[in-house]
Length: 475
Image (cartoon, rainbow, N blue to C red; front, side, top):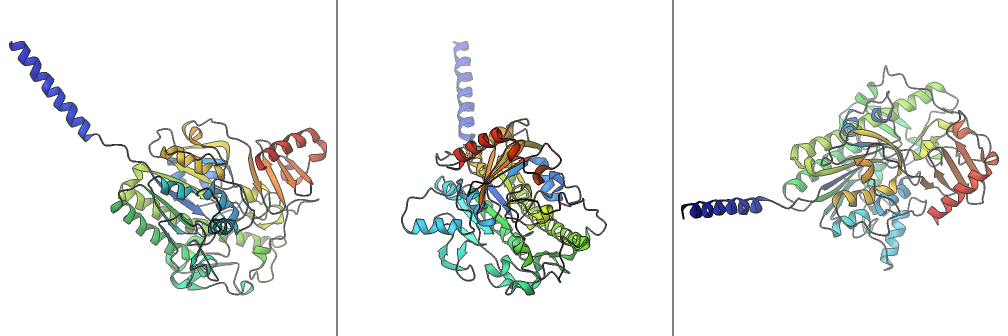
């Protein structure tokens, strides 16, 4: 009898422990998403091999997460590149890609939900601050602040664009220090360095608004959040507080690779976006000192925006939400700094299409490495679905990178990009460019000439093979 009583007591105590354990066990909360978009950022970061660049905050994120050293955007312009990021679909090569989508929604056409809208449908609070879609703040109209013209309908619970002294989002987009707005671009300097703190340029205001939203989302909101923060620099005109320019006073910059205008037909252009600004009559393709000044101001903009990224990441850590927040840092496309005698984007050369991508998921043990797996912007949407354990929609044209994040030696895939005149396929070793009229460029990255020598005529079988793969992906 005594043994039976002892057994009953033990069973009772054990059951109580199990009951308490079950009551204390909480369902795992879905991870938050922090998406940081940076405008016109080529992979000029120390973590991506640019040792002359000062980028400590982004480099720290790269050390904690996975940096995709061979990430390519799907279009070398702001609007269409952001379209692919936010929809997971190929689209028009024009900057109004998302506004065209909004028009289709207004016409009650069946449109696939955007990435943040998809997360919203799955219980997330969605907020955007700054330049996430093409227009900072996500609105149209003459000054990009018309609340009746929404760039991404049904997407954001809040879409914010602090403008400060720049009056409106259009003014902030192309603004310089202390509220200077671009009215006549020829009268606005192409670069500038001004004494003052971070708030004398628009990205300071964007960072401050992002900090406020982070505080609100982590203290008041019980739902997981999808917060997208878009910084403007280093977009033209190149302007940053002087303290960031001064950091490059004694820094030696590497030589410009392949600085000559390519021979024959290519997607080369004459840098009109750059040339619209006041350049004091100077041509960087003929004036090495001027070219060097431009590069230093671009670098200063990177270091300035790196500081803003640092503020956001520090604020996330201070809330404690960093332990359950997937952070993505994405550059919307590359930028030529004299390569192929181009100063700008829009071409289908590497310099226009190669951009940084970093993904940090604090729940994954294997992180803090660089991967050479070739990936594209379209892959971000399905990756975040995978990491958040929500359904991946069938319409997405990218693939999840979760396996790459979990495996350092994972293999990527060929990537596609397009502009208004051509489509390109990048493989591990070559780049095929197919113009709309059928003209073909083929470049071999295994030879010294790289993108300066079209080898299409000597490799007809490879051209045909890649054309078929390109058409299968594109059509």
